[in-house]
Length: 138
Image 1 (tube, rainbow, N blue to C red):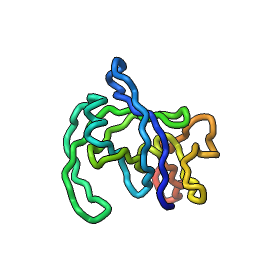
Image 2 (image 1 turned 135 degrees about the vertical axis):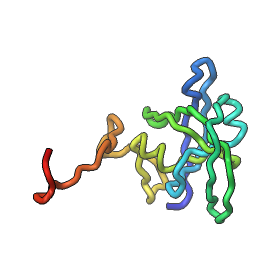
Image 3 (image 1 turned 180 degrees about the horizontal axis):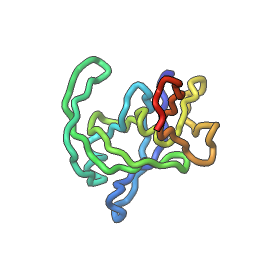
Image 4 (image 1 turned 45 degrees about the vertical axis):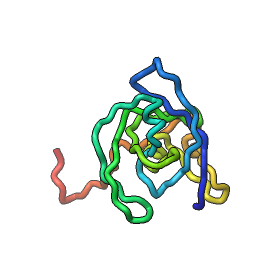
């Protein structure tokens, strides 16, 4: 896909008294989580909820802090998640993108709302399984 950046809004979902902040984020569908630099975690006064072992793009493994609750807003959509405290820029990974039902437009290096659900994010709550005739029914 190449490199894409997008402006998003971040907030501490547990502290409405704190100011929200706008940040430019690197979009990386190869990453799973939201990653934020230390100064963003401090500014939003996020709680430490533990540690995560992560593998970086260069293969290096590292233990990093995991903080929450952080609210991400983008295109009028939002999600609440945790974040890895890592790096020097905000990185938007696949999990929050899926949660907000966002898609990548590789040809334009852009992120946009899913055109199949332009008004509200949709999600898969449970995968359906075909019924088998050999399976007992309740």
